[in-house]
Length: 309
Image (cartoon, rainbow, N blue to C red; front, side):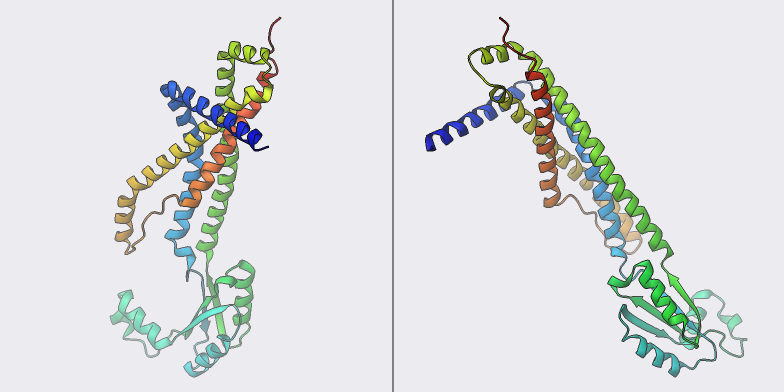
């Protein structure tokens, strides 16, 4: 049994090395095929990196969603602070900041440019405000609406405003991009299967005479098919590695300009490139697509090649 396993393994190693040798003997045509496969694989990878960097650039929307609770102007500050203290115990609330009417007026005076005009006012027209930051697990539309209804039910509250419309829109855009990623991966994956299948078909036609001789001496379809399967796997593996190199090079070229742009907005954000997990998934996808394309093509065309009498 050990001898049989050794012989079986040796045949696979022989088929692998033979396929590798044939690809190496035609470097130009092999490289062109790898380029086509790499371009098909790098497009969904690039879209995935775009979505990832878009989310990271926004900080995962941390503290981006909040509620502004405006009290009626006759509500005293002590009452506002008392209500804020009781609301902090409610589930789904991460933090509540109390902004007094005096603090709001001072800030408005400092940044609005109407400081002199505000001096003629006899009383502060601004109300006390609560800035409510929902917990990370309470940022869904239903949870935000529940919080809005909770604060709006207070008789002391005049208006409750949810500052989340842009976040909702951006999340919707990212969801569209994620679905486009799945669609693009499926379409381009089918393209990789077609490219490799056609390449293997041409290889089979070029080696028709050799295949007929192999079958004459007793070689089965499985035996004849094995080198072509390894060729497909090598095409997929090489295309995946080349796609990884293209993506990493693109990130490297864009990293410095993006970092410079981020600094103009007071951010230290830097682009994130493909991770080790991305590499593993890319290689696995390339190998599986390569094997599938080779298997479909070889299985179909080898059946039509039989030794001539």
